[in-house]
Length: 119
Image 1 (spheres, rainbow, N blue to C red):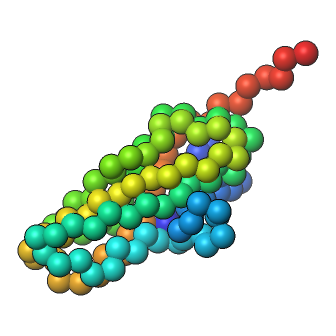
Image 2: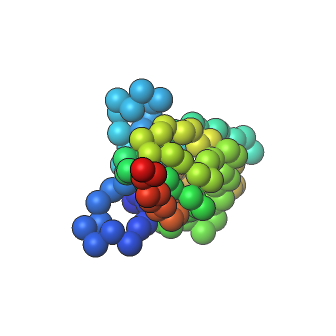
């Protein structure tokens, strides 16, 4: 799993993905497991903004998704406040040609916005 792309020279992870909304179990990949053809499976994972910035214009992709498969983002935030936790819902409807469990990386991109403190 890759976390948010940013222009941070240290390449620190400013977005983490978790299995639960209490952020106890961090995920490195999103595991859909095995799903019968002609059916579908939806998963909810939780994003945590680890930065001191507002994250805007968030986009989500699956860079190593097999060509035969399509994942759909059902619900995801476009903006996240610092230290916020938000859910993202993903749906997989396996193709007839896919014969194994699905485990993919989720790439998140966006802009970090820092606001000056008013005095």
